[in-house]
Amino acid sequence: MHIKLIVIGKTDNKNMQSLIEEYCKRLSFYIKFELEIIADLKNVKNITEAQQKEKEGDLLLSKISATDYLILLDENGKSYSSLDFSDFLQKKMNSGIKTLVFVIGGPYGFSQAVYNKSQAKISLSQMTFSHQMVRLFIIEQLYRGFTILKNEPYHHQ
Image (cartoon, rainbow, N blue to C red; front, side, top):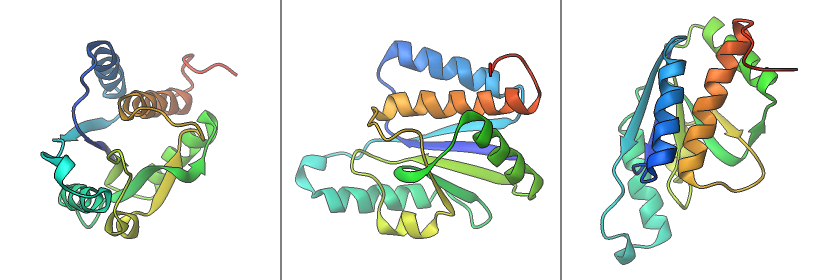
């Protein structure tokens, strides 16, 4: 299986970017992982929130193939403990899915077309975090999930 994380906009905080790179490197020891960044839209002051969601949604959907299993990081998604998330990953690997795609939307969330295409929604917390922090959190949780599956000492009970 291959895991891809698609995000809108670059990470402008150097410390955050360094941590993201560190966990991407760690994760790559367990699975093929790809972080794909879609550039921020230009001139968003001239469009409505709904138009911005639609444009970002079109860009996101252009990066997803018909066989990808699409998971949205969404505040209304299912919450998992780290152990349950590792079980979720194992089940997806066992099911024969070739590419598991996680998506972090723009500042206003996802268009209806993106929701319609998705197969699952996951919430990392009921709290709101910056999009840059969410990137780090999901990559770290993916890494943690694989260390749990391999019975390695990273996660403590």
